[in-house]
Image (cartoon, rainbow, N blue to C red; front, side):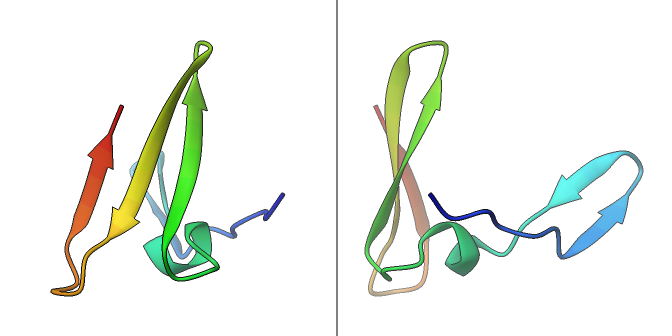
Length: 51
């Protein structure tokens, strides 16, 4: 599993480059409380998070 590194840390908020989370360039699964969400980068360079 990839371990993205913080890009910058300001005001107690970790900031990550989305391309580090989505290493294959297509999508990444994110799990929260047993629920899986999919984070995708569109062709237009936008982020979409779906359940």
